[in-house]
Amino acid sequence: MSNPRLRRRALLTLLALPWPAAAAGLQEAIRDAVGEGAFTEAGITLALPATAENGGQVPLTVQVESPQTEALHVTAIHIFATRNPTPGVASFRLTPLLARAEVQTRIRLAEHQQVIAIAVMSDGTRRRAVAEARVSTGGCLA
Amino acid sequence: MSAPLATPRLRVPRSARRGEAFEIRCLMTHPMETGLRPDAPPRDMLNRLLVRVEGQVALDATLRNGTAANPYHVFFLRLERSSEIEFIWSDEGGRSVRATARVTIA
Image 1 (spheres, rainbow over the protein chains, first blue to last red):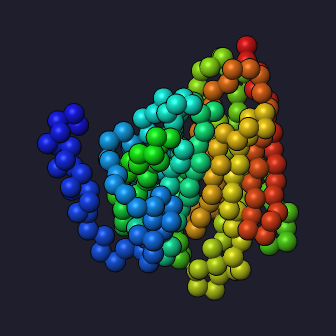
Image 2 (cartoon, helix red, strand yellow; image 1 turned 30 degrees about the vertical axis):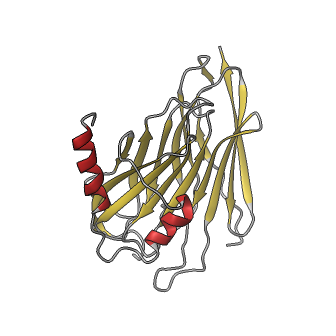
């Protein structure tokens, strides 16, 4: 992603992502967590299974490229589900005591949807990753 | 709702090398009942996992509706000296459970 043209295109694509029937309050939840402003999509990876058999236990991994030093580290990782009854999944406050800016957990997904991870760096920059998972059995209302 | 919180399960190495990353896994048995399901029992949610190393916050997680039942977390620490790692899970009713593990730096 060093080519600036490619990078700009990727950014535009991300901003234009359609979220039809997004969870009520998704944008508000994101704004409450990280405020207004731009995101880059480099330096952050969100991994989900392509298909989750059980939407009640979907493994998720977020990795952010970060040296985790006092000078530069990830201060927060926020996770949002776009089509759950409520968008909030979890927020993690990180410190340089963590060797890696990486968190693994298990989440609930009500249906086939996109999941968003947002990382906030100690220099104030924000990164965003989006991943999509199909769900065989919904994990929220079942 | 009134049953005591379960005993957390931790997987923490007993020893590690100075300054090198090691993995911590923790699992807390809990229904994480959102109260949103049809005919659901009342809401009963853990809303926080706090991890401290020798009293210093390393990771502070806020858990919301999308966190699965029996919350499971994996993360990586690095230590300069032998330390006690403290884990505290809290629920929305103000109850909490604490567990500790000691990692020796060889």
